[in-house]
Image 1 (tube, rainbow, N blue to C red):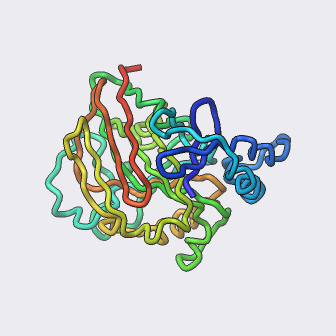
Image 2 (cartoon, rainbow, N blue to C red):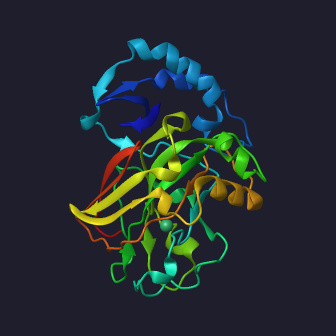
Image 3 (cartoon, protein in one colour):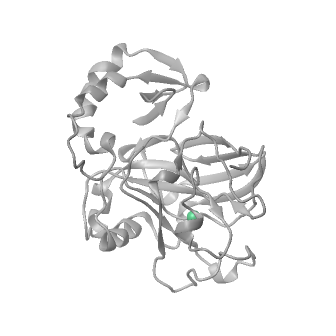
Length: 285
Ligand code: MN
């Protein structure tokens, strides 16, 4: 199942080149009381929402996907975890990204995590709004894990039981001397979309082809098997540090290929079995 949020916070199920509007299924979400449990409300209550969707789907209004504004499919995760430099053969890379690419992992180092603020989330139709006109910002197209079942100290063997699904993430990155969590948490620097594909529809997330283009020019082309650390390893590792809550997002790391963006650019990221999303770069904030 492909789950999207579209137009003015409608809940949709993507069916081929159409979207079925199943927004009334959200009525299954219980009234919220302070303090609200951490995590994304949609994903936390999915077991209540899913049967409503099944009942609504046959008669749900359908719209052409092409005409819709797609928003981030998750809205309030407790955290977005990023994995830095998760690539095999880092030592052989001959790239200079300047400031902000040091103090990260070398071959043989453990998994390197950072946190992106949930307030950085944007959807494909929101576009990306860069800041700091005098500095370089790079897009990093990444498979993004969406946690379903909460857990801590999860074993690699159990990791997939805790995954709700996958979407595409753009881990937008300002270069500079600040910590990664500062440079990657600016508003709109976490683009998520175009929808969540539930885990049952992704046969092997460790073997997905991907490519990323900037204004039609190929910048990244890879497969998730090129990651130094695989999906189960990443979930297990993250959960040794943090309790993972429903809707938490883990951007698993980007392949090699870097090209800074500027206003007016169109970024396109595509992953097999997930889909593709186009994201416009707006003027500087
Ligand atoms: Mn990244």
